[in-house]
Length: 391
Ligand SMILES: *Cc1c(COP(=O)(O)O)cnc(C)c1O
Image (cartoon, rainbow, N blue to C red; front, top):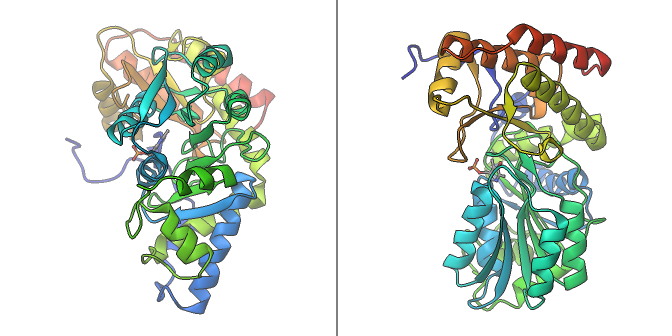
């Protein structure tokens, strides 16, 4: 248990991440009646902004619950008992998706690697060619607990080639890792504001293509008059300007501010900012003599760095020690293995944030009896930052 009830000075977790003053102020603005014309206009605007952040012309559905709602909704709206779905399961979120799919009666073909790896397009193509009768393919773009990124562009190509509807968990990639739903032909993407967009947690941001709708509309079991219904939002909100359920006004205001913020910066610029921060963080980890969790650093995600722990240490021990002694909150492993994670998402993907994470982790490990080269690590990370400034 923490010895005080104060939040730490720095939160470098893998989401929810630090929220800017602008987002906080927006969340603190008056809570209006949801059918007030001003709010109706805001809600419509939010749909447009989310579409711009995604860079898609597909329909945007905004469900009023944290991203797990959107992911579960994607499953229950699509899956008919007996339908074949390919699921890429190289981490806890991919595994969880597989349990949902099977739980709703899908015949799941799982593409598995260990949690320290990412399946190659060749591996996925091989499974796709063995199961051309599959109707959908599910993939997690950034497996946050493992700090890995999947080759989504190539996966999109495979889905188009075989006619699979893709279901993409883009929660930890939107705004921080290149994501192009239209160019890559992605069908049902689920994202959230609380990771790289630096917004509040409490909303699922879903983009649905025509092929995605076709599959959902083919499903007699797709829920209606349910909190999990994507179709309710299509027919009632998109086609009728009526809310199936009352949105959280404060969250909507906060997510609008988060979207405006990233659109003013430019999504590509934000993606590049995340890439440079991740570069600094990884360079520091390696120079300290530590190992990245992803076995191939080319598969390391740019929104979070997962660091393998030295033998004999567990994630909760390291994370709690660092928070208590240095006031820096990093993330544990979420069951993915013996690792801790330094998040660089949204506001924390710039400036000295990775240096703070690295120094706290390095000294924390030293306090716990493991020798790491903190000085060299910080020097190398600062050199990377100086070569590619990220103010
Ligand atoms: C954060 C995150 C989610 C949202 O789930 P929570 O466990 O509620 O935070 C879903 N998928 C991925 C890949 C995430 O990083």
